[in-house]
Image 1 (tube, rainbow, N blue to C red):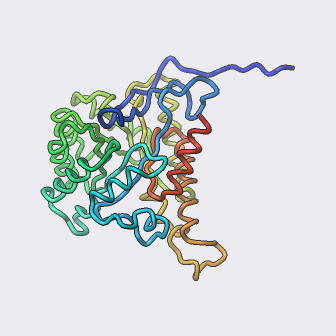
Image 2: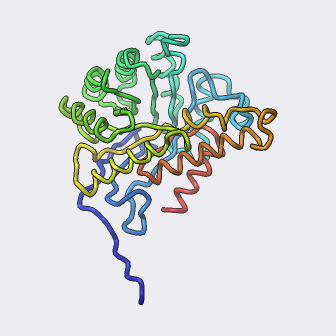
Image 3: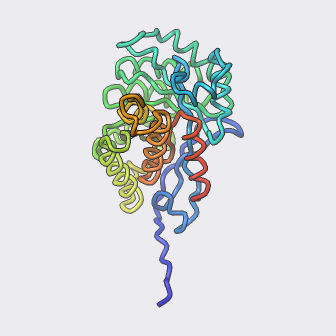
Length: 313
């Protein structure tokens, strides 16, 4: 019996969120099929890969990353090098030094560094905060003001600080914001709803419903993302029809498989390759679950995942 193809498409679709300006701007979302189901219908805006780097500098203890950024010492030089990484569609700048439990850099100093990065960047810019809700609530709003007109994506607004970020970043200065929840479709939906009640449209939001390295509770992340995407499309749930971004690098390079030495576990193979493998595996699984963008940091990971996306779609 001949095979009869029955494409599965939906009348519902994911909202489109634009980050950046001019010819380099990117659009996340817009699809009306399940993740990577280009055999059912064209995917309007394929998933994208971003390059993560910190205000503390790139991870020079990882040989491949150190080699890529060799000679780039200033923040301007590092930013330009990140933008040139093959396969990158955007860059993600993380304000690690602002962490209250670390260097606790002031908001004013962070604004100076963010302005430097924004001026040097030739790709759309994502800015990740410290992970401290109180500090980020103030920090991201001030950065939004300083970078008015740049159309950056600020990660992330949480249940504890969304009011200040929604008003101070999205409504007042027209920036895009991330809605960060903790691996639960109901929490993700609740946060989206209360942000939208403040007047922020879906087109100004990107969801970040959780992240974990493959093998470290990632099944919960995958399940949450799949359920979000399924409800958005098959149930036409407007509160979940928002693009999803997954910060992979911060998880993949902190687990045991990526950091233990070859001396301690020679049978595991080269440490750097293990980290790359973990980053790629987690990124691909995130995309298959429904993420519209992943954030990576190793040049090999960025090139591999970008190539995979282009060949699949």
